Length: 374
Ligand code: AN7
Image 1 (cartoon, rainbow, N blue to C red):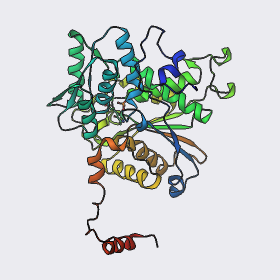
Image 2: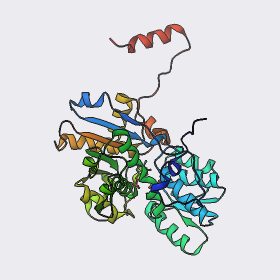
Image 3: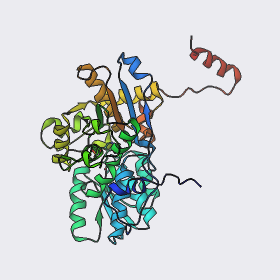
Image 4: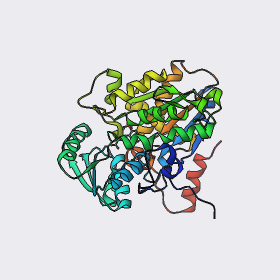
């Protein structure tokens, strides 16, 4: 029998802080498709390659599974019997699922009324103790840190360094798929763990660890030596109503339709600035209208349905094109962090309502004829 893919810890064991003693808690996350856009570049009149790393196809529907397999495996290795996190939704879904897989308890704090229904249903189905707070994600983040200090709980937000270790593997996969790093990598930024993890991953794939390149020692299996130091320019995109990196300061009352990134006090503040600076990249922002338009555009022109927070990368890319900062021939990867099915309400509210007709052949035929391509 062929050994089938069994998740990113087994795949990248030699590059992750695990040992033979680490119990691998996995749902075979990672190994997500890198889908090249076919229609959008043409429609935009750009001769560039745009590839979407569709993290929505992870087991719980978001990139959080990459971090959670590591965080929960290490928690169980250390003897933890319960984990806790604050979440805008996706982290709670992943934490709940991996805790179920591990047979341990899970507590999640979520902002009341501000998490997408798909995510809430996941946390509830997997048996987590779901605690809604009268506050936002940043309040929740403060509360879980306090709780983890004096209660027997392992905190699994991205402040837990094992989360970033798992999430860095996305860069390994991109480099393997393309044979080298792309020119640009665009992704949404909320709590800022993921942009930090992307940079760690690209740096390790390039043989650049702790600021020094060791490719000559042959520690860089993914790249030809000539390309060894190559890393992408990172473009971190925020929702305009929750954009502390654009404002240069924390934001107290973040608001956006992209509830996943409704975060004003990102915990990986310094790491994210370093990633942006070292990569020669930049932060940009998109309004709610731009985010929803980008989500719809991607769904209608390419058949890819991501959640609003993920469409932020497409919105940021469109802005970069408008500003003329991305040259012809560039290879661009966009991380689509979560699946569109996570947030059906937002999708339905921005689409036209289904038609309703009598159940007769003539009614159906009339309607179809009206809509056939001419
Ligand atoms: C779809 O679930 O913070 O910048 O609590 O769900 O690493 O925070 C979610 C974040 C982007 C931002 N896209 O990533 C949570 C949570 C989606 C997300 C982000 C999130 P970070």
